Length: 215
Image (cartoon, rainbow, N blue to C red):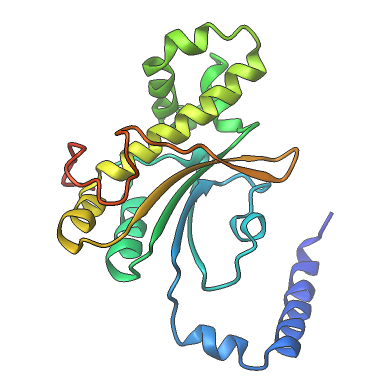
């Protein structure tokens, strides 16, 4: 297990290795960023966005929270989304959940968890929307896995319904894709859920969703 003091040594080693490969690496990064991707993922320490996608610094903007939720009143997420879409002009927005998600499991277990229960209420709402399907799954682990997938789908819908994304589709007429992924920690593999609620890709899907001006 890495100790606190080792973090600084690891940093110095990483800087040395980076400069050995490319002496101008950090100078170039300091000039700005032009990522093509916004990754909205879970805060779980086992799901490092850059490592699982093989991306380098400057290639992917990342926002993470418990259970990869998109909440319209979350000004942190909405600010990141607006910056990514309107300033950085990202081409792809990825909502990535993962199996064995503690947030999803906590939302299902019926126990009191304190302050986080207010956050998990959003996952409970996803369960309510899909109760008939989920209650029909007898195995608790399989039910949890399915809720992880359904939660990703719902968050993709929410991204698409924000005025930020709607404006990009309506007024900029540019390709902006929204994707739903699930990461399998036990295998290290990403699965694209092919979320497609409108029978079309999200590119240019302006007007398909009612949206809140907060988004």
